[in-house]
Image (cartoon, rainbow, N blue to C red; front, side, top):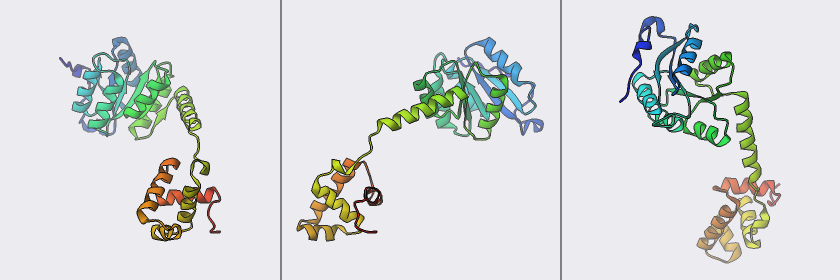
Length: 235
């Protein structure tokens, strides 16, 4: 059964005095941590903690009912884990920004949270000032990654990029290379077919094979590739 901690709300969400405040929902299964976060945020004049959730299911329900501007979400939550909760909130109300706040320092979990829709990610050992600043940034629609998280995300990107072997003309047969060269020179499918003495269907099949081997999807991409490789006769 979902319990709403509305007793924690000192002023109404819709009060005129709070119109410009950043409304925040705290989602963590540790009461003492939620209390600590509330005590940390309450002195900030532009931030209003409107509710607390002690599990992922409550977090989703409260977020969709109260529509806070920011949800501060732990990842290791009971009933519904933090990543799934983030995904549900982001899918059903993209206007709500989710800031993941967790002890999880694993690249896989971090990337899953970001893919699920988290706008920011911080570790729980961050400074209080950093958390406040991160809430303000994500409330404005900006992304925020703590320094340690940013390093991991960049490393993940670089490693994935490094694992991708660039395609080269050598993966193509001599005929496929000639088809690519003619495409880049601006020849139509009919013109290529005539020059080879084959049907238009045959040329279309060869073009499809070239695209598949090079992992390219448009004639424009094929042309750019051929130019970069110095395969075109057009200067």
